[in-house]
Length: 477
Ligand code: GLN
Image (tube, rainbow, N blue to C red; front, side, top):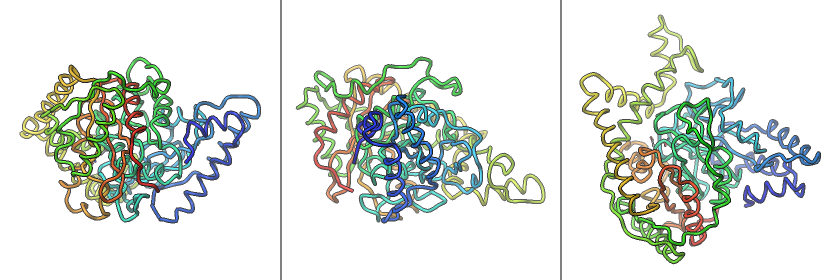
């Protein structure tokens, strides 16, 4: 498939029209012969009108920007003015955001064209997109398998060739894990590098928006477009960093890489073998690769599944039947509130709200929530210690390749285990990326994860590019 880099270059030079690119994307989305259920809504007419504007700008000698005419799919928890934003939930049905998320504005300024909003686990809680109120999305590499989650629709959209780029959100792995399972690149930026304004909150201290792409360079390009300070997000970092894309091809000569035991042990043997192979490739390319152990990572999952539900239980209190979307009437306000939330939330969201409320309740707060925060600090310190001796870490993204639809829906613990390798970077706020690296024994994609210290996105993309350049043939769509 054409990359965003080359498509934007063609559109800017006038050798290809944005309209043709957008129409091609819309035709593929509408055809969806495999019934992947990737999109919750498609903005066909708006996208065509926007593409025409871009072509007009090019014809008039103006530069529409670095993503000129590139179709982009948006996870349906990113607010789009006047366009349904459901978060994969019944409770937001009918709600039309009155404003655009900052990332949506950044995309527009860069000349990108939003083609649709993608399917997701309800409120981004899940690892398979089966928790969507609108039916599961399917994996384009093998439609009987899950695409991963919670940004499964965005990963699938890029893997299926519906759009060269997509945005997702990553609270515990929701960009990287579906990227791995669908065989595309997915990246979570440093917490605060990308504005969360207009991202519907799940767990605010962990949520970050990030890119999906078919290549590392495309992911870097999209990251550069959406990164930067935003006064509308109080956790947005103050200074703008250098663009990362110019350094993508700088190689790994002398870079110290730690092959992290805890991000490989416990993974399926075929996945572990691919990570080892990627480590060897990095060494061949001039990196200094050593094994490293960071035992604290093993506690990340438990801490996450207290902190994230605690924050979610508070964030989701706003869906009261008054301010947004769904209302189910009742005799008094409390009855209306209960009826609305009972009807509007799915089982996993209810589970998280209960878990979080329990972890924050008087008498349990110290034992659960406060203890989890202490563990989070230990994980952060463990990263700091590791980064004294290495520049980046590598490991698996997900413990297995894509699993069958339905295989884990009734076993929350088995579902949560998907995030065991991705959660540490969310707890620390560090950037991390998943790069497709060949296939498992079942012929399905494997993702290798690269992790870097805060603000080291340029280095992260550089290392990821070398992994990508040495990757064995992947699973074709
Ligand atoms: N799968 C994880 C969860 O269910 C992560 C979700 C996410 O990153 N949004 O919480």
